[in-house]
Length: 62
Image 1 (cartoon, helix red, strand yellow):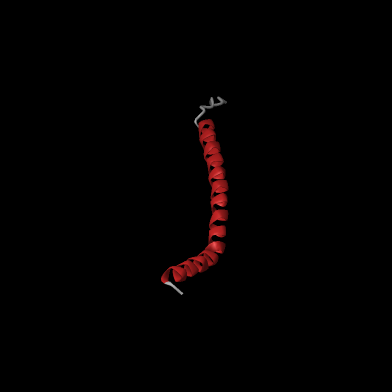
Image 2: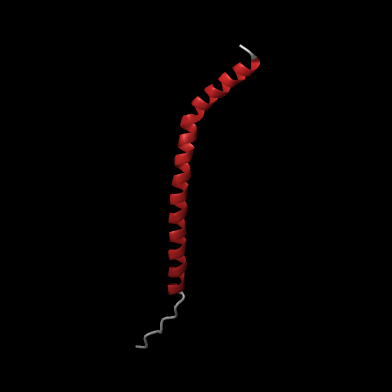
């Protein structure tokens, strides 16, 4: 077996070994996009809610 053939065989073995890891990383990216979208929704809600708290309410005189 020549050096090139040996390197090619090693490359193929490494690609096969890394397939499950790459698949998990791809899934993680999708999960991060969902988390990011959820956080952005919560931040938007918090910003709108903070404006409500700043709204001055008149005091009721007894």
